[in-house]
Image (cartoon, rainbow, N blue to C red; front, side, top):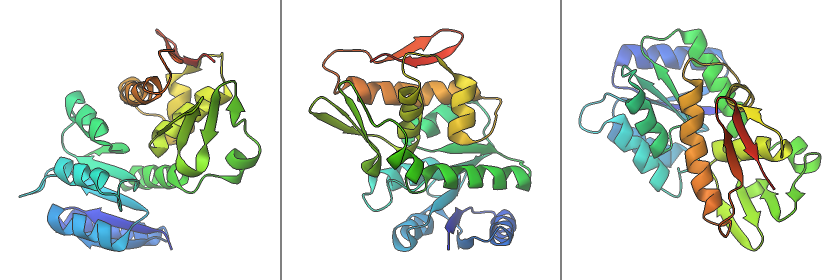
Length: 231
C-alpha cells in the first residue's frame, strides 16, 4: 500500500490530512514535529512526505534538507505546506529539493490532486519510458533506472523531477517546449507560479548537464516561450 508521511505540528490539520489520505486508499503515518518526522522518514520509507514549513525547534526547510542529504530518504518526493506565499520562500524550498508547494489555507481536493500527481510522476519508471521512448540520441543516453543521463562517457544523476523535464526536452529535441507544457506533463496540473517553478528546476538541471557536457550547452532558453534541447 502507498504510504504517506505527514509532518505537521497542528494536530487538527494533521488529522484532517490523515483522514483524507486514508479515504484515497493510502496508508498515513503522522509526526507532530520535524525531529520525529525525519526519524519516521528513515524508519518507514514512505512513498511521499507532506511537510509543514512552520514548526517549532526544527522547521520544514531543515527537515527537507536532512531528507535530501540522507542516502535512505533522498529520493522520497516532498510536498511542502506553507503559510509563506513569497516567491523567495518557494525558491528556497526548490533549491533544497522540495518537489511541490501548497500554500495554506488550501482546499483538500487540491492537496489530493497534487499528491496523486507527485506519486504518479515519482513512481517507478514506466514501461513506456523503458521500452518505447527514445533513450539514445547522438552522444546522450537516458538511464531511467537510475534517473541518470550519460553524455559520452560522463554520467550525472538527476532528481526524478529533473529527469522527467530532461526526458520531455529529449523526446522533443530541436523543438521548443513551453513552460506550461512542462508543468502540465511533469506536475500534472496548472499553477499560477508556473514560470518560476520551471525556472528553478531548469537552473538545477542545466547546471548538472553542463557539468558533464565538456563545454557544450544543450539546454536553450527561448525567452518568452520555453526551452529547447539542442543535440
